[in-house]
Amino acid sequence: MTLPFQLGTLPTLSRSTVDRQETLRTNPERLLARWPEAQVVLLDPRARTPVREGENVLATRKALTFGDTPPDDAVFLGEWQGADYWSLPGEPAGEPELLEAGGSWGFTEEIPRYDGELWVDLRAYGDKLDDTSAGLFTTAQALRNWHRAARFCARDGSATRRVQFGWASRCEAKGHEEYPRTDPAIICLVHDEVGVNGEHVLLARQPVWPKGRYSVLAGFVEAGESLEGCVTREIREEVGAEVRDVRYLGSQPWPFPRSIMLGFAARADASRPLRPADGEIEEALWVSRADVRAAFANEGGPTPIGDGAATMMLPGNSSIARVMLEAWAHAESGA
Image (tube, rainbow, N blue to C red; front, side):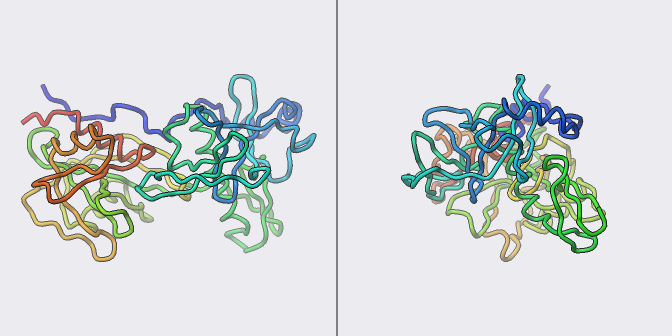
């Protein structure tokens, strides 16, 4: 019997090994005592962090390099195998060489290289890191982005200061506390109604994406809206399709700047015309399982689809969209 497809692997940025429980970051005595043996993850102004060339782990720094106690802008990330990990702003110590490389969405990006280290971006490099490094990098970037947006109290507008070693902010005027915010967003793989898992998947392209880059549909959850209701509304708004049988697949943090992607699958009638939303969706189309499999076999490069007049590139390896598409492509329709 054919079963509905499920994610075959954990999304790249969902991987983590670090213990980040609240009791660790609310124990100042413990954190201060362990600071001399701690490791620090650096983030430059563009949220890049160093890795040694040819390696899949972060190139962390010894905490004592930054003083005998944690600086005011240090953020505690968690504990792993007896060591505490923190995050601080930092940049290469000298003038780096700039290397050009293909980014995760088909754009060329510059990667600074200095003293045997590459300063890499989470979106483009996250899938190359081991589980511990991927979790540390994702958490560090999520907290960095939140602190940049939380400099003033949302209730009275007064300046805030960091407390709980980066896991909360407190306003100077009234002592109101705020905690890191995450915006829920749905991402949904819609397939046709053939069999259990369909034979075609609905893909779309935003106007700002490179030509040929397609992905599944996504959107932010609105106030007072259920996740399933958001799936139905977003698919209808973006391409005019009516979905049914909405079911949950899995999730992935997406700190660009502060989202969590909640993955779903749904079904829709592929015979009905699609109506891409002006300004949001450049193109939407149904793609066969055979074409998606061919794209994976082509390592995500431009792959002819349909009659060969168009080509397709898949989402980058750091996105849950790729994991969803891969799981669907390897499933059977059950027709």
